[in-house]
Image (cartoon, rainbow, N blue to C red; front, side, top):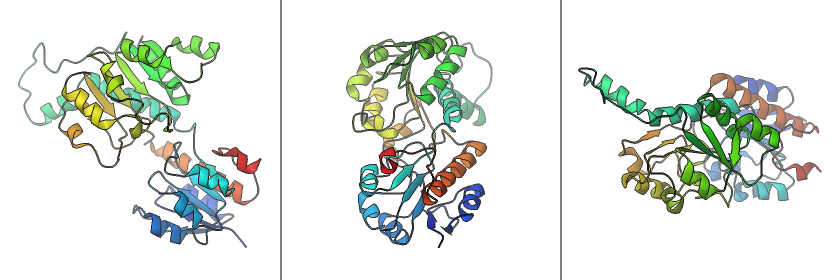
Length: 324
């Protein structure tokens, strides 16, 4: 009998077609998000699940899915999944790294440019019919070319952002648990420094670390106070890496010049203080939102789910110990 796979929410069609070759697919094309109770009920007879960041694959949900063998996430991050609980059950967890690197790096630099040059506010000014003439100081912003960018994390996306920064003639600093190879540092012109030095010396601080217990609130009031007064914070990683209340306070007090945010601590809810600030650019978690990229992410997740359920090794395994 073919294994049964639940697709939790709307996906690109390629994923459905891939799964249907080898599996019975439980799929209702909807954007609705299931709560834990409904998700657990839907998973009672499933061997696999194709899920998204919005799906609560908690230890409680996993415990109520006795047949589950694979949790395949359409994203790089997987903090919505209790990986430890899945691993204890021998359930493979997969994700979709690599494919979204360039799209997320593009978005990171777009945010950086937008907040530095005050582009959203300038456009709103124009659309509101307020532009009457050219003035020498009309919507002047901050320099980007030749400035210093500090990358907190130098994985795939951090390196891709560094390449873009190099094109802008920027000095590149990075802080990371592991030192990059000499070849990577030379290619990127990147210099490794402690986090406090990076914050102190950077005009732009861009976050590219995963959400782990040790990175939650990595950027709090102490770190924000350690940044330059004219500096900007860019976050396209995970919202909980930043203490959002501390960030609002720092922006309100002028401790830093601004922020560009694609992710939030309690998304889709935003700290109300962020909406009132003129020196932030806010986006609804669209870092990888390129049609070709999102479609490929869905397909890769479906391929890995199929691989697990047909006895093959998936390409992107979060917990490799389950197949050791």
